[in-house]
Image (cartoon, rainbow, N blue to C red; front, side, top):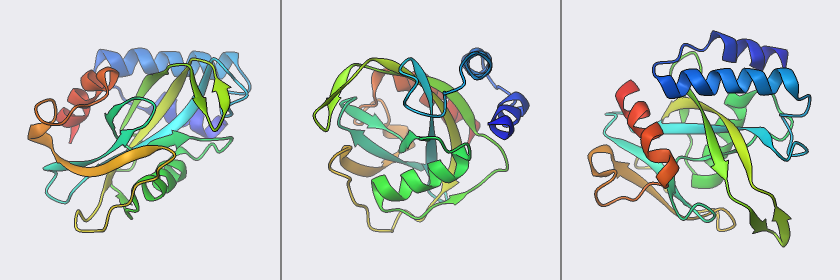
Length: 183
């Protein structure tokens, strides 16, 4: 946990959202001892991958079953403090794509709201994900696969079509705009 805390402390925000979320992450780390697990029902860490094609003209998106819209692949860290390895694993599990990390540091941080829902027959209370995001690159010609218990669709979306013909999860739209400006 100490290494993750240091990585977040070293992260250089590029906008107000990242600055505020970084501060919130650090407060949560300092206050809770269980933010790496789902045992913390208020907030817990997740890790995601912003995957671009080589030309950086498309991004890899999944149509999320709970959020009912497109978002980038990611998931709970479930006790693992190495968020980069979690993001890489989530890309492959949710999309079938093998991606490579580009960049040396965290790409972004953001808080993602999760509404109360039923998953695998169990009630999950509303909570917040403390999401650590990494930038990846992948070959867009790799075959895509869905993970039916999490998503209905996996696509390579042209960046200039986001918000037009491709519907993002509402709360992700301002975060996407920041990400788009950073690549």
